[in-house]
Amino acid sequence: GDVDVRQPRTPPPVLALELDKLCRFAGIQLAAAEVERIFEALGFTLEQRGEGRWHVTVPSWRIFDFVDPYPADLYEEVLRIHGLDAIPSTLPQISGSDAPEKPAHRLRRLAADHLAACGFSEAINFAFNDRSADAGYPSLYEGRPALALANPLSDRYAVMRRSLLPNLVASARYNQRRGATAMRLFELGHVFSDAGGGAPQEMDSLAIVLGGQIGTPWERSAELDFYDLKGVVESLGEMFGIAFQWRPATVRRLKSGAAAQISLADGTAVGYLGELDDDEGPLLVAELAVEHFRPKIHGSP
Image 1 (cartoon, one colour):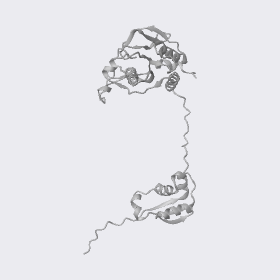
Image 2 (tube, one colour; image 1 turned 135 degrees about the vertical axis):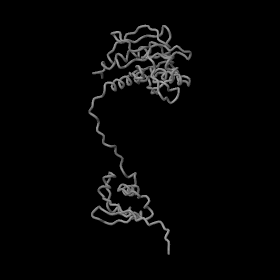
Image 3 (tube, helix red, strand yellow; image 1 turned 30 degrees about the vertical axis):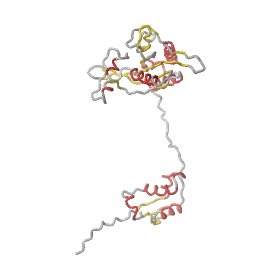
Image 4 (spheres, helix red, strand yellow; image 1 turned 30 degrees about the horizontal axis):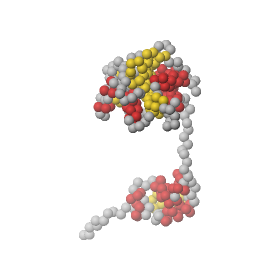
């Protein structure tokens, strides 16, 4: 007998189309005659099922574009011929939250805005350090071990940072080596330590780096120094209603006689400031535990 090896003929998909749903989807008004004209030009067959309603049969050469047919597939056919440039752009209506701003978020915003107004640029770095960099800088967790990662990306990211300074100083030096004359950077972020047994301890920190010369070709240049950075930190404290106390201190990696401990009026140490002790030129650094600012920011502008 005869054997028929043809592919079984696939019946063309038939989809229901409603004009009002098409118009709501597109956000524009389309005439029924325009919709019919577009489909007939594309080879689709329309069967009227009421006012603004049709059954649309897909042509044989387009059936594989409608394997899983949805009404939106028909909308796309109409709109691409009508012209996407003829559809006006509108932003979605998104209602804002009435929830008050969290104190921690407000603190970061106020501090970042103030430092930006002082001419600083904000840096964002990884929250990881290599062990040598972490051990080579002072930190707010001085004397506590670093929190090691069980599966670090590489040796460069072996521990969670105890200080923001290693990466921030590296960013400053990178730019100085490429001709940047005045370096003013800050970073707000979390620092970590091992609280025992691998349990993490975490706090918010602010680090500031300052160095180089300021001035213009037609003015006399001035070297940024210890007192410039001290003034920036004092202005930050003044904004939060805090009068910082300054005491000479010996701080690792900072030059002797050019380092100070920063404290609150009750003697609570909140950070340090000083000149970095290395051979690449003067660079002033400071790091503060900003969690001590939080009780002070309620009612701040």
